[in-house]
Every structure is written in C-alpha cells, then in structure tokens.
Amino acid sequence: MVKFEYIWLDGYQPTQSLRSKTKIEKEFSGKLEDLPMWSFDGSSTKQAPGGSSDCLLKPVFFVKDPQRKNAYLVMCEVLEANGKPHATNGRATIEDDDNDFWFGFEQEYFLWNPNNNKPLGFPDNGYPSPQGQYYCSVGTNNAFGRDIVEEHLDVCIEAGLNVEGINAEVAAGQWEFQIFAKGAKEAGDQIWIARYLLERIGEKYGVSINWHCKPLGTLDWNGSGMHANFSNTLLRTAGDKAVYDKVCEAFRPVVSEHIDVYGADNHLRLTGLHETASIHDFSYGVSDRGASIRIPVATVERGWKGYLEDRRPNSAADPYKVAARIIKTVKTAL
Ligand code: ADP
Ligand code: MN
Ligand code: MN
Ligand code: MN
Ligand code: MN
Image (cartoon, rainbow, N blue to C red; front, side, top):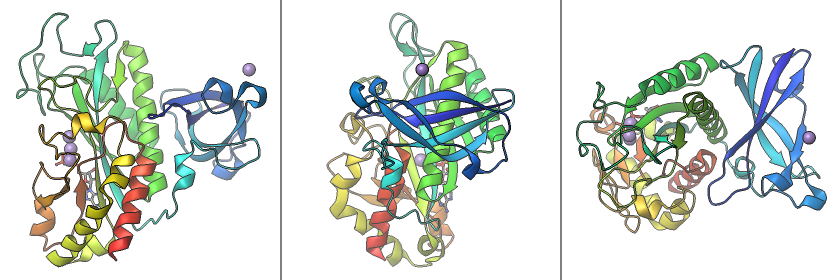
C-alpha cells in the first residue's frame, strides 16, 4: 500500500495555511498524471459554503515523503466542484510560467515555543542578549533548535527538493533555508513542500513554526523575509550595467503591485531598519542590504552577469504569487 499526502492551501486570508490528508492506493506508476483527483470539505477551510461544500484537489507536483514508509507528498491545486480554479488558488493565476526564470528563495522563520509564546532561546521572563551573536552561530547560548533544522535539511534532500543551504539568522531562534527552482510554479511547489516538512517536524518536537514577518513587533529584533533571488537569460548573460538598471527601473512604477503579494503585515517589517528598505520607497544598489533590490557584488564582478535579489517579500508570502509578479515585471523591461 502506498500513502499519498494530498497537500493544499486553505482559504484563510491574508495568509493561507497548509492543509493535507492521506490517500491510500494499491500502487503507483510514478507518473503525476496517474495520481487521481480527490476532494475535501471546503466548508471547513473557508473555501465553500456548507450547503455545497465539495472542493476538488488536482495533483500538480509530488516528491517522496521521507518522513513516512512507502509514501509521497502531493502538492495540489484547489478547484471548484465544476473544475474551475478556486479563487484561493494562486498557482492557477500564474499567467506565464517561463522556465527561463530561475528563483532562489531564502525562507526565514522563527522556531517558536508554544508554551511561553516566544522564540526558542528566549527565557520565560525578559529577553536574551541583544542581536549580534546569533547569525550563523554555533553553541548553546547562540543557536536554538538545531536538531529541528538539521532534520529538516535531511528530509528536504531526501525528498529531492533543491535545497541549497541553511543558516542561523540574526534573531535568537530564527533560521533560514534556501531553495532554488526554475519557473514560478516549481519554485512555489518546492517552497510549500519544504514548509510542510518543517511544520511536521515541529510537531514532533512540540515547537511551532512562526512564519509571521515581524513576530516580535517593534522590539529591536529582526523580522523574517523570503528574499527572492531571480534571473533570466538576459540577466545571466547581460555583460552590461545598463541592462541591470533597466530591469530594476521596471520595478519602480509597480511598487504597490509587488507589495500586494509580498506577504501580510509587511509594513511592520519594511521599516528601513533591520536590513530592510521602507515599504514606501523603491531603491536598488550593489551589495546594498538596505535597498529594495540588491545587486549582488558577485554579479558585478562577473561583468554584470548573474541575478538580482528582491529583498521585500516576507516569510509568510505565497511564493507562487511572488514569482509570478517578478516574471511579469521583468518582462515589461525587455
Ligand atoms: P544572502 O547573501 O542574501 O543571504 P543566500 O546565499 O542565502 O544569500 O541565497 C542566495 C540565493 O540566490 C540562493 O537561494 C541561490 O539559489 C540564489 N541564486 C544564485 N544564483 C542565482 C541565479 N542565477 N538565479 C536565481 N537565483 C540564484
Ligand atoms: Mn469524512
Ligand atoms: Mn540568505
Ligand atoms: Mn537571511
Ligand atoms: Mn538574501
């Protein structure tokens, strides 16, 4: 018997959450097209009224499930009973899934103690030492929850996700993983599955994953981002600063269109402090971690061949929507 965990995004707004349920089949051909459609009770996920509650699950991406015997994780799109994409189905709104666009998302998050409602590493009363010692740290006083992070890295690799690295972040209990993929759909699928794996490991340890972009509010602690590194053939082969200026300038008139899909509560995070630009401004610069878009110094050193980093998307953003919006804007510069 083979276990398939059908995973979808619910209808909660402004931040959709992961939902899933298990389907047992006798065998599996290994082909996506042989995974059957399924259904769920949309009235329990804010996706349908009780009177006509059925929503459909359409498998769109799968990986091995390393946390379970004989099992797969199946990312699904939600459809209405009539087969049309549901209004909450962001993946279906990707107009142009151009695989020439490569994405490297840096997903930051906090490991969170549900008992005292604080990050791991925070004492029940008061605060740990101020920021400075935690980023890329090692040691009991600096890095909190490494077992969870290591286990997550292992299962991501075993599942076949393109995870590229992990690191402890600037705040206590804050971590990051990076995932690279080609095209908006696959980039989103991979991030969502990686988030799912992390949530499930958290259950084992009694630790929750806090995806909010500013869980410590206005205190002097960093928020969480999901920096979107991106490139297309133009950026990878440009050899010319003017191309980079032109692509960056294409983002300037559409700030609000981008912020709309860059995650809830981003005004709390994009303050101009803590390595962010103000949500009201648009700026770009080489090696500038206080800019909206950073041009990595390595891109310049390779003779203006490489990629850009949009630093504005936050940890709770939907990667499908972020990637789709970036493709759309870059194409206006071409
Ligand atoms: P930072 O210095 O911002 O912390 P990271 O090393 O965490 O950088 O992340 C850099 C990201 O850039 C990685 O996810 C990587 O996949 C991505 N990346 C590298 N080259 C490209 C490229 N040509 N196109 C898109 N993404 C890229
Ligand atoms: Mn039932
Ligand atoms: Mn990083
Ligand atoms: Mn980071
Ligand atoms: Mn970054």
